[in-house]
Image 1: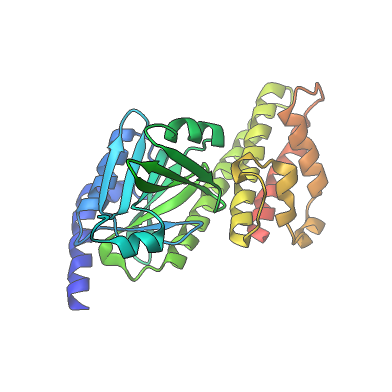
Image 2 (image 1 turned 135 degrees about the vertical axis):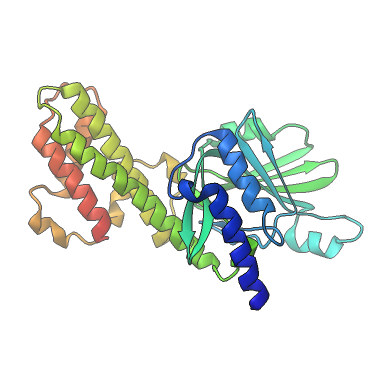
Length: 314
């Protein structure tokens, strides 16, 4: 225990000297992203832990690299030697176990007193994933075994590669320092759920203020704000469905508002609102299409406030 405390203090000291002012800031710059990921990978005793929001965690990382042209982080959990590790290969069904994340942004946030990195990836449909990975191999199989990630299994020079591809535009991967093994996979998942919802709520709060300064006659701006509100609502609902363990036939990223509203199971708060869920859906639909229908600013404000309450309530 004493050695673990020393490791934690040492890590925190190095972290604070470099990144203290970058906590809870969403970072998009690729060079800064690489700098932060490098630090979490290399500045601790042993490799970090990788926790996924919709599957189990990795207890180590044998190797990692960046692809600058595609903004990808390549992680290798295990690359087994076929002669020495045949039992492990048979157990996991692959020679190489990897994860490839096409990074949109990262954020450093706190979990049980420790800084952790959350990673948000871009989405790719199955056709695009097949185009990227179906090269240099004699066989390939693409499966959707988890809600928010795709698994690519390919044969390369008689060795099976098993590649996990986080595949939705929200924070789904957490890098946890090795010294912070007191953070459980469940606590990492809860942190990712909470941060994703928090990010949506911040955007919605800003949107309410911006709507207050918009004239009812500025229909184009109101339509833009309505589309932003819809996107935020859909994003939050997807996270809520994931947390509830809902299974959809389609990719979560492809789901639209009508398919997601079922997770709003508790609507007791509606008695205190001046709009119902159907009204919210109707005005967001008006904003999403070239309908030629007048967008009522007051109704849009009510809809955004309803979304904020509904997310908090459920």
